[in-house]
Image 1 (spheres, rainbow, N blue to C red):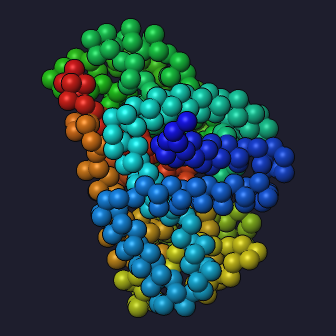
Image 2 (cartoon, rainbow, N blue to C red):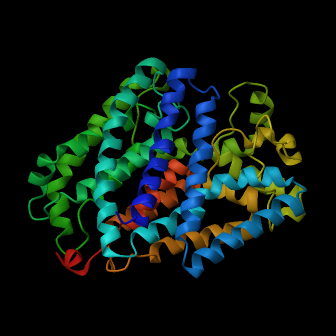
Image 3 (spheres, rainbow, N blue to C red):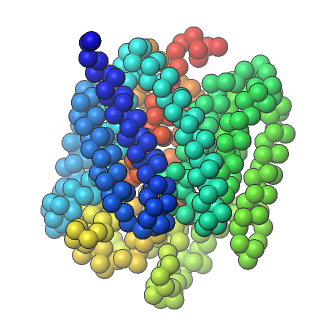
Length: 432
């Protein structure tokens, strides 16, 4: 029997996918929510090893090699030479970037030939569908046990509520678009209603960003062409109904003291904590809440305080404070910056904030180049853009700049980068 390299690499890819997306729930079930466990630790290490191994085996493009090597050099200079971090703490911090560094090369390999591409997509579609279904019992169990909140992370477990909400929408969007007949929109949706139904877990974990995602989901569900307005006219009643249902679920699950959800401009400002008064009173906020166990500076306030931090450390603007500033563990030494600014590093950090804090101007430029490059990486034989899918991905990038740095999670990168790489079509499919 002839050994097939593709078969082994594809199996390893999906083993890593399931380990990264499911062991969190199992760990919480056995050891309790939020508790560190040997299962989580081993799973993270195994997934990192799989991604690096697959990346090394598949990398061929000079651009990918340059991006990986340049990031290693930038992060090493920042962490070890500029900020005197240890090699161990740098290597540990580097693990959080394995997804964005290597998964693209792996996906390039699967898209290099039509044979590999078709076999990969066939398996992926089946496993994405299973992933969506698994979120239903997992989220319901967490919701009834813990209530709506960060602990409702589906199969990914405690702390992954944002990741699971994003991935639910993008996986559902990817699968539903394969079943849409553009000439019979409502009939197609009613026939494939299951993909819409599988969105409902996102309304049980208080991730308000789901309301933005569901609107974009339906706005971009149809191909953008001359008939777009007509199609959206037929689709708009469905969107209104689903948003109303989602609002009902959300309002029914949040604490009554928070009041009912209002989907207006004030909602988005409040969600990002983009209140200038909070920024002006940032130090008062810190003084009042720093000693509290659940202390967490709002996103917008973090962005406002960032220039103050760099003005106190003017030599760090170019390369930041190192990729070890978020590393905390029994065996990892905490950096001097982390000890001094622990209060500023707690909680959720917007992507633009965490990138600039860790790697400064140079690292932020590197990240911008990486994200832009994603829109120009296409598999052979698949030259046409799926404009709707790529716009949806672009919107995710923009949201994450101010929402959270989800790119440090392998489970997020597995799904989102795969979604983007498969947003290219054959000529005949694109024309249809």
